[in-house]
Length: 420
Ligand code: ADP
Ligand code: MG
Image 1 (cartoon, rainbow, N blue to C red):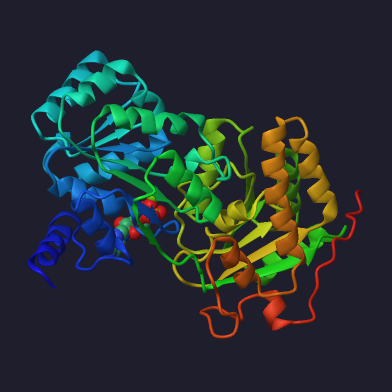
Image 2: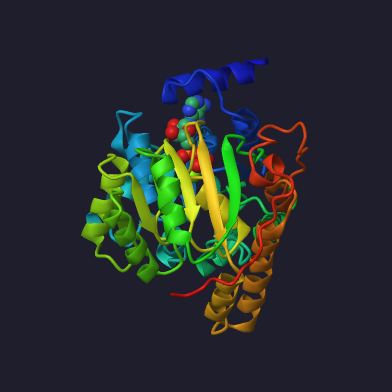
């Protein structure tokens, strides 16, 4: 261990109270401290924030952190402030600030107090802010959730496409891209878009050995099948994803009628109800949340024991993210997806109103989901291959944790769903 490494261990302890780095954190931090462009691909929960927070805290100047969600930024700023006696150590810059607040933020940055400045990508396009940031020392620009740059990612944000131009105006500052989206296509897009093919790239494994993957043919008995499954997991927490709000409501109702404590969650419910239902799930007042994909961003319940997909997801990336909410604590996590070709057609119909380029991407992503559902090979191997990772389906960690491996003759057929 050289003196440099001892230093960053000390700083880790001092600021965060941790005695060890997690996974690739130390290598990433060293790369950032060397002022290199750095690209970090780690699954959700891998500890990406610390990778830029620690270097920001110990380097000269202010680090700009681009993040897509105001709520996430606020959480992070609060967390950083709690590590320090100075509120000004971290700030958010966005359109909701008053003139006085903006003046305070600028003052804290100019005086060197502010180490982390969180901004939404649309705020960064404001000329006034760019002019100000050009006049102060910037340690680096970190782009969190960097997959938002790519149309092949699961959360494309057009504003992210402008980031490179704005960063260029700030002079020669290192760029740090971070994402949990691992497909080679998205990675390529990010590097190209940020013009940082020279970046040091750090990629952690995406294998989740404690998750069990299973696909069942969707039949007209799906509701009683789900009820049976949940009763076999009595008292455990689980999420059921449905494609439509209507389906969310009707499944939640069927579960309630059958004595299962469940609440619906979708963007059509008012904010108060959504917050209430989310809290009920987190506080274990209910076992099951039936939800559209609106549910889950930033949900960190460690003991979710199952994730059921009533309808197939629109990409394997989404599937990985949504099932990834199971078994965060390392314990059991059963990921069950129902599959019928009718659903594929439904999704294709949804997409047919969109621009052609978007449709093509959508269809291609969907075909991968179909291939996953219909495969008879190790599902884990299939998923990890999709993320550009080789997996040995005999000796790899979690190798026997799927229906195809446990039951090699198993084959899911895309039976027509009989609509009642
Ligand atoms: P990501 O952004 O990759 O999803 P986060 O940055 O939110 O992950 O971190 C996930 C969790 O891991 C947080 O609760 C964080 O406090 C914790 N964590 C990060 N680094 C360490 C570490 N070195 N030791 C222990 N816990 C850590
Ligand atoms: Mg994160």
